[in-house]
Length: 324
Image 1 (tube, rainbow, N blue to C red):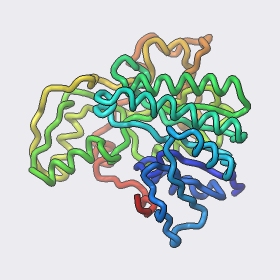
Image 2: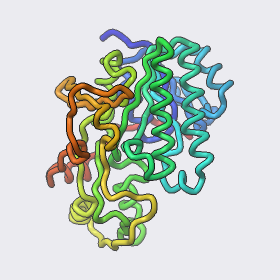
Image 3: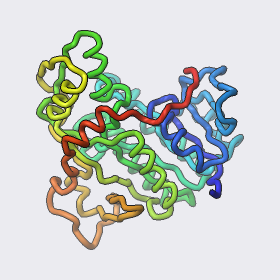
């Protein structure tokens, strides 16, 4: 296998960054894991020597530039940012500063140091950004990366991901914590539906994007995902692990359903199938052929009971062990 060179992952102390580093490790000769939470003595010398750990806050432009200049990454997965939706609503300025300005810092360093490609981790909430400050910040990041792609030789793209099963603060993780603590699972989203991916599916998607970066450059890449009702998942969860549930009123700005594509984006979207996987590509350019007339087309196919159980009982690849 020919190495793709050096990969840099921001937000690498998080669930997604850690697991992606494990899955994508065979593709790269060196992997730089960056996070403001990684301590100076994080490196475990028993870990594959491909890994380099760097303490970095994406709000500190000078430190970002220095790290890029010293390591010359070929590819970047930009996963760092404010992810907690409730925290974003109560700390809007911090969310905007980190998710927008921090993304600009990463993009400028990538251009100056001639990276090949930068993949920004976005969110399905960017499809309807009016639903909250978090969705707005991710929508801005997508637009910024469109602009940087047009103005440079670096391939910039975004990927919108749904809810990743068992990630910290995901419904499954929250439910398990509540179950262990009290035996009662409280949910504000019983009648809501959400798009789901496992972390291993996420890593497979990133693999396809890396291998076809020239085809995805300048787009927001939306992999076809499956949807499930929170209530259906909750019943399977209780059947598997036990406990009871209590349904609470929805919180603001929770939305009833997840959508892959926003209504205004439909005419700017085309589809492509690669490695037996369907992707929707959203851009700023109107497409000649309209894929659909309504959002339901982009909501995702419904997960079967078997798929829900597999998601609940499945576990991600072993995460990289290092201190934060």
